[in-house]
Length: 160
Image 1 (tube, rainbow, N blue to C red):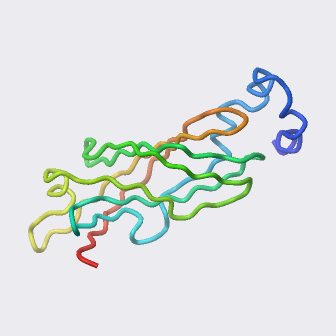
Image 2 (image 1 turned 60 degrees about the horizontal axis):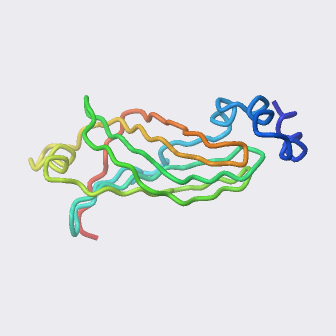
């Protein structure tokens, strides 16, 4: 596996079909690590001035070349998809670089806000599953990396 990384500078000038046989899409996906940020506000619902949800993820590039993340599609599940949105992201990571706290934001309608932030005084936010897809581009090709999180409860942040 390390041989592929050391040969990349030489193989960069080979035709795309040769590169695809040496660096298949599955290999590219294995060398990009991503997860929800290990922070209490990784999935936060903010209520001021209008309700919106903020998702923070960590991404680490183990590829031998630069990685560009140009989009993100997010689904938040509570038995079925409650929120689905896509957002443009413009992040560039050098080899072996880790980006912490990459944000994506979506505004909530009243139905979504009610489900994720119950109005009853004693009720807690439900645990949700987050599935997000990173759209990535490298000199070796374009691919999408999908990450499924474990059940996590969103943090409700009132006025700050």
